[in-house]
Image 1 (cartoon, one colour):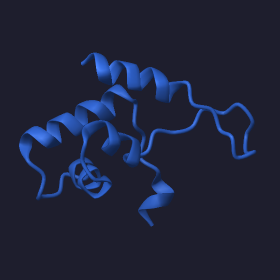
Image 2: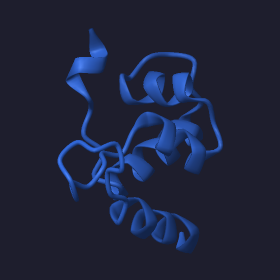
Image 3: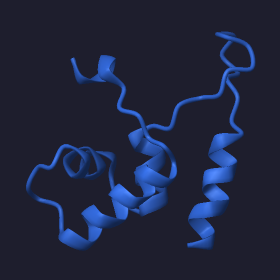
Image 4: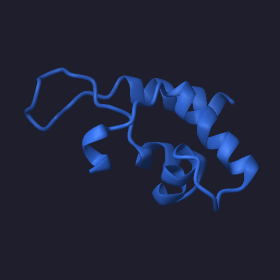
Length: 79
């Protein structure tokens, strides 16, 4: 949708402001996806990991948003 495209542009232009790697683009997080999809971040996590407890329509919406945002899982966060 147009709203998702606008959010994609906004997120893709984010820059780090924490002093690390000046000018580096910040990664998309599950919290970003949750905010856009209107769900909690645990719901996004369950959807991305193929777990039960997420409706088909919600899962499809989350996966599409993740795809549009070029979401890459943070492997360090899986520990």
